[in-house]
Amino acid sequence: MTGKYVAAIDAGTGNGKCLVFNSEGTQIAFGAREWSHPEIPEFPGSRVFNTENNWRLICEATRETLQKAKIRPEEICGIRATSMREGTVLYDFDGREIWACPNADARAGKEAIQLIKRSLAMKIYSRAGDWLAMPSPPRFIWVRKHQPQIYRRIAHMTMLADWVLYKLSGKFGTDPSVGSSSNLFQLSRRTWSEKVLDWCGLRREIFPEVYESGTVIGEVTGMVSGETGFREHTPVVMGCRRIDFREKIEHRTHRTL
Image (cartoon, rainbow, N blue to C red; front, side):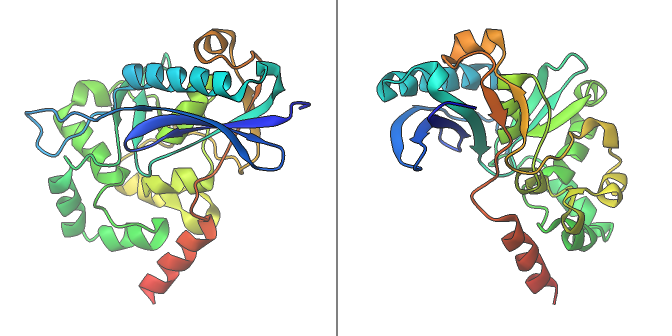
């Protein structure tokens, strides 16, 4: 990697943005596009993350950022991603997005209550570190109950930051700080919890491989190069969330003492 700059893409709650930093860590350019997450009227509390529209907005932001930075695409030595917590994307066997929600999606309240009644909430919390208000366990149960035609087609699952990396490189993956926001992790092992997945009736094979932050998981594809303005073959790097993973473990430990 010989470039002088790094790019970061953020799928945030209110917008998609791209930032470019120099080798000293100074931000030199920024571009963003606002978005919203509509409710499905028949499902109170629902919010939809429109992957097709929002990827288009991210691409607009990346092109704007590169133009503002006044640098050549080949000067970008790597791209990473971050996102809002708890947003989820489901894919079919062809890698196409079939269901996605942002962090504000609250349609699975009844399913969360069911997990509490089954005495699973505290068991999940003790392993994965979050309560059941927003993360993935009740959402998967909701999809299985209310949209079984989608549930049967699930072949892959990622969080939103992982979705950005997938769009750039065609590779599925996550890191502990991002993947753990699903509340399906075993924090002490830094990977998916077989116990939690079993309690929720989920297949292990739909969940991506876990990489440590800083791992190069792929390269920008030719098609995406045209969409984003990034050079083809630019390394796509697993990033991490702003919250340190150790803080999450320490917080969980404190709460359970």
